[in-house]
Length: 598
Ligand code: ADP
Image (tube, rainbow, N blue to C red; front, side, top):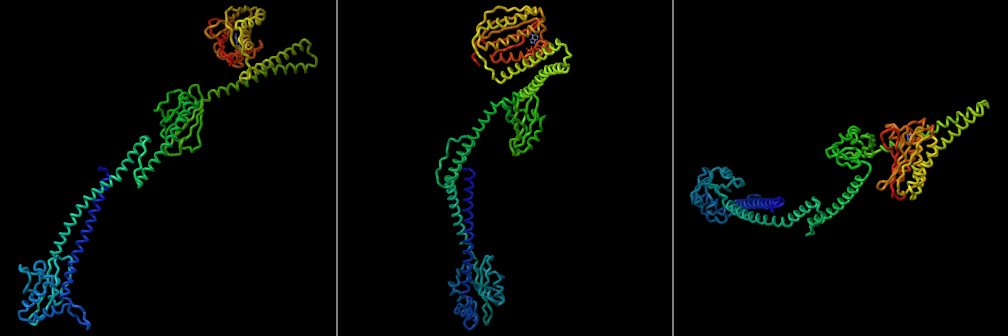
């Protein structure tokens, strides 16, 4: 009830009533005083005053009275006689013997000769009007500031001069004003009571709806849009309540839209492969998605700052100074990864921030490197045989038949061999590029894996025998597998071919196989030259050869194992080098038993 608006209303009412009463009171008392004074002087003027007559001289307004007075002034007992005249006119003069009295004074000495004041009171001696009368002129000037009213009329007689002095002590006005003051104070008290009542009623019609609105606004601020405020009146407060309800609806819609957008962005940031990190104007972390945490290879907590994470790339102030849509970009290395980073301010406002997008380009860079290396390798691999072909062909052309036919034939054999080599390389490259592009049709059938191994071993047996190598196949019961048999045989041919190639004459090669769980395996072990440890992880790379001269000599291209790897991976299997004690090499091929066509 005593909320500030209520008190303000009450104070305004009290102030209004008090000031109204003060104005009315002042106006009334002033009016009463001036009315009383005016009527006194009017009364005196009617009795003692004169007015211009038709012949231009001054004529008394009350000639009978004035003639009687001046007539009596000539008598020897002038004072008593004049008193009789005055006594006869006390009604017209308003003499009441208490507040207003008359005095007959000696015109020369000012001595009081007679008066209506029974208490023996004497008139003041030196009022301006008295002084005027003693100088012979009528004293009837009014002085509003004085606490009395008076007129002094000089009367000349033959025996002497006299002054008729009428004095009113204004106590009637004071009493009247006192009465008025009491009435005004009573009215003020009643007015104040009424104002308290009014302010209470006003609070009912104004403050309570405002309080309801305040509660509603607090609910909305707390996010509760459920309860609408009832519009109870069609006045301004009713309109305000309706507008408030509408505003709450609009706000709720906007909040929902913002929430939706935020959810969308959250989902986007959560699942996108690029990293997104946001910092506020002071460099404090606002957001970091899982991809960014992953790329930065560290825990990004809320305490992390821009300075800590990207301070070395660009100073924060420099990014904030950018005008949208400008941005800065750079590259940074985190561990083994290369990250491309884009930095942009996300608001033109003074208190914006910085949004950073991280893009992992490690694989891209690696692929680029591989591509360059691959092109260099291909060029190199083709240039060597081409140079050979060209130089032998030039020699044959320039010899003009000087070269013996046997030598010429051997030159031609070299040319044919180099051409075959190039054709071989080109064929392998074609196979690889088809596998890369996914254009190679795999013809999946269920076949006997053991039988496929046996047929590959059998195909290589002659070559092994020719080189005096011991090629053994461990018998094993193998389930049938799903796959492209000719291509898997091509893989095994390559592995077994390598074992024969890189094992000296008289060496040992063992082919073993088996099954475990849901997969089958085949292993080719030799006791040949083996592969140095530093080269082991590269033998499945394109064009990688441990000993280039030996590989080329034996017709190798350095592509066989990379093609094998591609084919096996298309079967969801694996091919890898097994590290074993002792000399030689072991390559193991593993394939799933139950796989459908990919
Ligand atoms: P290549 O056509 O040169 O044989 P591969 O891709 O088949 O190409 O083999 C890659 C390289 O791996 C070979 O050049 C060779 O140096 C090495 N390598 C493969 N198999 C063996 C093995 N059984 N013994 C020793 N080295 C081998």
